[in-house]
Length: 99
Image 1: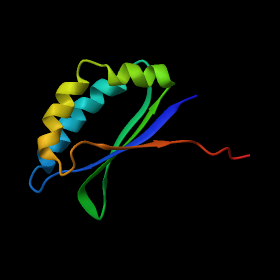
Image 2: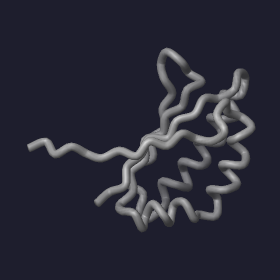
Image 3: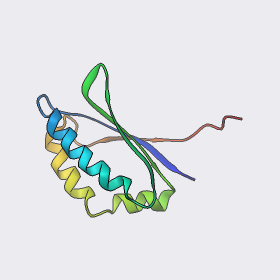
């Protein structure tokens, strides 16, 4: 079963360019992970400092591999001072059968 989540955070005023630079570089690495199926980064049209990252991993093992990737901790350490929250807010999602 896939592991799907939405990560949300808000860039501090004036930090949008730096956050965008960081998340773009991070996204390139995550998308290369064997078990990553999607890593799509968005900002809200009405609130461009609000970032939403839609992530899908092949399964729980692939998600755990993502969490343990060597570049994750440095990314988060660089991101935290640039955002309003203490960390990204994660919402885990479950698909609804369409039948």
